[in-house]
Length: 393
Image (cartoon, rainbow, N blue to C red):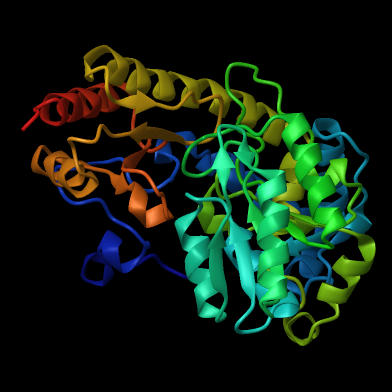
């Protein structure tokens, strides 16, 4: 029988996980779920159920496009929450959004191509694009998201100068880092502009299931476009646990088949095969929806604890964006408080924050994640931040 590690074999957390907060710090940097919000027992039971149901098939190489039980359960979930019916053929199993974006970028772009993004945007996506030799070009944005006419002009200008535009990478739903929710009319206008330019849109929808306060989420870009020229990326990292390394790519059946026919899929099958079957169990028996309902309530309490304390104590020349979903609060700083000074002041009182420049923000701002701490800790962090940030001069 296998035995667990003895005292001499135990590892430090830093030897096991990607990020460990500094001792005695309230870390509002990463968009992680508090371990208290992760149902270890429920996930463990799902793995046991998948092994019991599928036996040795759960431990084999997975179907290249992803096991049908997972894609079918996911298609039903997406159909309930989107404007168009999804089918398993519209889905490809991935090991989360990062792996999907890396695979997609390698499949449809070439070094030297341009990728269009919002500014600010998800910082680690920028790293993936640069790893593939892409040039990042920021789109002009307003309160609703990228300006469709400006996007068309940017594409035309780049192409007239001999540059190839690979795709536009957008986060329309509870945007990271600003929490912006793009309204339906803007979504339709962007799709129309992209189709006129024959421009592919990659829609990162990592936070689509994290609507708070009953906020109605607009249809996905992919559904509005009926899978014509838009790809959608999703993940369970923000709703269940990042260690599952499970997500999906949604697109036309033809594109999903094409990606499933790449050499890496023939060599190793679909990624996270056992995990996909386990998550299919959670979606099949209703556990995932029940978990989402509880998670949204907890996240709303945490958002309110952070935002209300900041609004109460910060000077009037700080701007907090409205937060209707996702994991983040975006704070725009007054001109007299430089971004790096705000980060340094926060660190001095034991609070870690993310500078807006990390996300390519053209304005001085910071991102605060409220998902990893209980409300009492968030109130304390917000009070500390207000105390040191309000000091002018």
